[in-house]
Amino acid sequence: MRSPFPFALAACGLFFSAAPHVVAQDLQVYGQVRLTINKVKTGNTGSVTEERDNASRLGFRGKEDLGDGMTALFGLEMGVDADSGAAAAPGFRNSYAALRGSWGTVALGRLDSANPTGSPLYSQVTRITSFAANDAGATAIGTSMLNARNRTSNAIGYQSPMWGSVNFRARYYLRGDARTPDQENGAKSMDMGLNYAQGPWSAGIGYAKDTRPGGLLANEFSSKWQAGVRYDFGVVEPYVLLGRDTYAKASATARAGVDYWLVGSRFAAGQHAVVVNLAQREVQTSLLGVRKRYQVAYTYALSRRTELQAFFDQDGINSSRSNAAVRAVGAGVRHDF
Image (cartoon, rainbow, N blue to C red; front, side, top):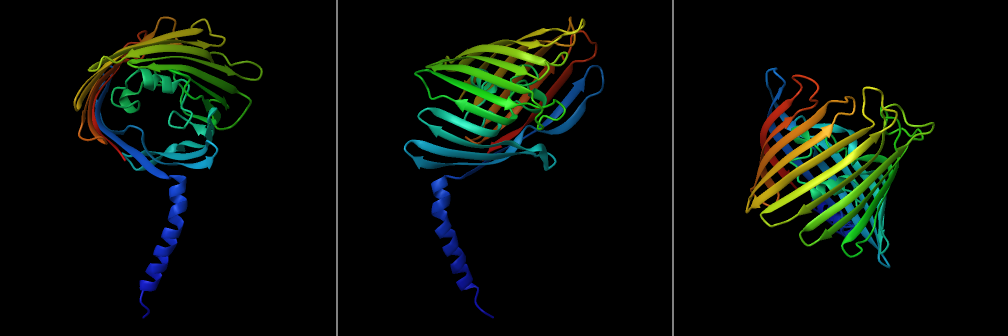
């Protein structure tokens, strides 16, 4: 029997000969696992205990120096339901190729706030506010309360360099039908965000506009603006964010304009942190209904990568309906790698 040693040497030789190419591209494997045990109660019904994934993911990203101040960037990030092991649908949270130069960064593909151009609306939200543990699962507010649309397919994004304390983001994408968002049908969207960061201050203002050939459908989202500010006192970081969403051809029982706001603060001392959020959003399909949200969350950092989480969340859903409120309490762990 021939010794396997020569084959091992050959394999090592292939690995080390290929390694400089991998290093040159600066390839990185990363991810997060987020899991909580929640008890959820809706209205006057009995409570349900669940184990819940909170947007776990596995990703690959990298860059290549092209010379003359130019850099190529790429990324693929998969969503994983860590509680069941199933892949999220669609399979990739983001998938992009990008170029960065002195003029800024441009990216193409399926884009979210983790791509090199960020998200004009959602990145403002994450910069100005703090989420109660995760913006996923029982405590999600980024899309449900603030409509800060983040993950878009068939998109082109741009992020400017910093001009002093200010930068600009824009994203244009082919939206498709709401039932089949990955199929292009002429509907288009444009999101823009102007951001400020200087010392303890963070602020931003964002705008979005949707169009559709032949006009928008009844009660379809038309446009929005949002604005917010945050100040870091050290231990305490208060913030406020507010906005207005406009809808097309509102019916007699629906709103053309939906106002919303979020007021909160993060308190941090050593490994301990507490987030308190109060939010309200008018219900678009009801002239009288409002959706009120109260959140309190606590995190304890076991390390730079691992934290314990606990939260309480009460979501009023719609004040014009009885027994609609959802109350959730949960605890879990988050690990970054």
